[in-house]
Length: 454
Image (tube, rainbow, N blue to C red; front, side, top):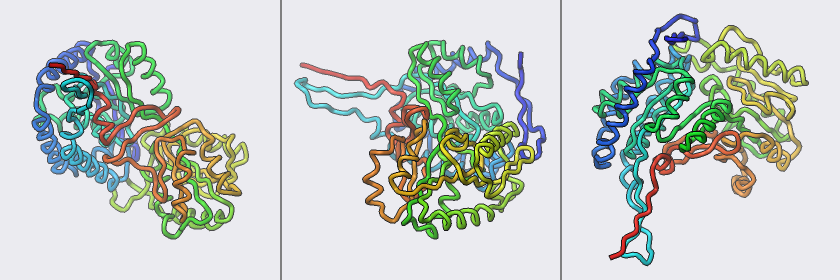
């Protein structure tokens, strides 16, 4: 039986730390602590809970350098992007400091009663199963609104970012949150299954793969517990003939290559109308070639290795199977350990893995179409549903297409991205439920109807 977790720096393969996994008795202790803490935490006024959020923001700000280094060492993100991730977490906290009180206010409903309203009560202990690609942001966008609403949280993080998971718990403790309000669990999938069957755990939030989502949904259903799933994506980027490439090409490249292409909401399929196709290929290729590969700890590095070598191997296989089916390599397609060279594939069709599967790395699949109608049809021809982006000068016409896009997001002249002010989530096999905004705060509350007659 596995009793420890080792973490490694993906850029050089060096061993970072070894962590002892929580025993079954330790997990039970953490569950009991969460349960007892919830009984007092939920009774606090919202303004008291939110006041601690300012402490949390201060902790992030004061420790940004150290935390950014930890992110980069554990999963290989370029250091400038790691700093930006910490800053985004601070922005998220500020948003909920400003808005939690009115998000959670009772909703008065006019009925025949003397008074009737909806109150929003916390559910209790919420389990979060989180991925490695944004090891702080993914956790904070769950934890901040969930705790502000009066719940307590247990985190099962990806094993390769265990150091980040432990550091996050320490941040909450240093911010003076009650012990047991936020706890990290160093466990495996078997441990998660046992936790899901425990009555103390009231609901689960998962960000991860389709496979992990199906398993968690099965466990949640078996135990009749609410679940929120943010799963994989294969976002389309539609480039119409009137797109202003000189203005938007940097955004388009960033939409694929940010975080070394390791993002569920990255643009993965570029559907380009033939009128602008050659110009697009030239400008896109030029910008991708200009990306600066190197050590992720260097400030001028803009793209680096993937988080693990096995991830690069999987991507390599997807690309090769697509080439075998007729895709052409315009740029890249070289792997060295965990590094995968930024790659552009043309002559891509809907039967290829790079079109119909999620590619988690810096591979851009380019599809040429004849018309705007064909572009939208091709964009919708897939099983994922996180987001679609379209670049055009006629944004009014694009707006009229909104209902044709079944995804959780439709961005015009901008890359799909998460924003604390806007709800975030997917459809189809990209999951269900919404994080962020007011919807994220109400994801794990009991919407209680209260009806009063004199």
